[in-house]
Length: 159
Image (cartoon, rainbow, N blue to C red; front, side, top):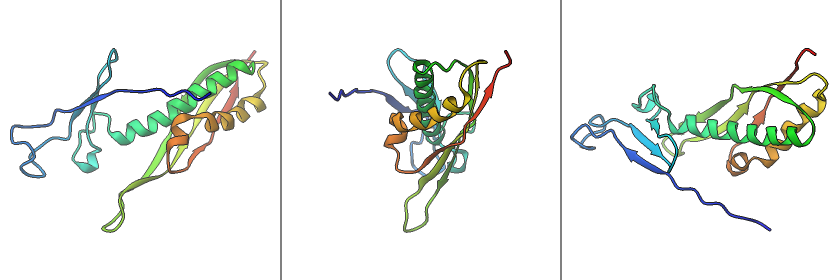
């Protein structure tokens, strides 16, 4: 039986410098993303679009969401398959094409690059294979209209 889940966030523009959007350069792209009971996220546009490089932008958040969802599924699958993960870091990358006069911009691909350390005695081949299962289970990857690749590395900790 399928279940549905609902999410609520509030995004508030904080970049009004007093003139609103009277001109393209009259306002900052800053915003705050909020969800009840969670820390706020300071956001802005990508610096290429006049945003603040010190804040998260929607493109960062999209890639981080895909990476985090994959990781959560991967850790679950490892736990139920007897793989003891000791460390996990993903250096994910994505490519976005701004489009041109006739085409809107869009992400064209993403590559997750998890570096996973598993305990001695864990099955490294299975640990690597579980990344494919995690990819197919990931809610975020299943919702995207561009390919998400995974180039995982597995390291076995010394005994």
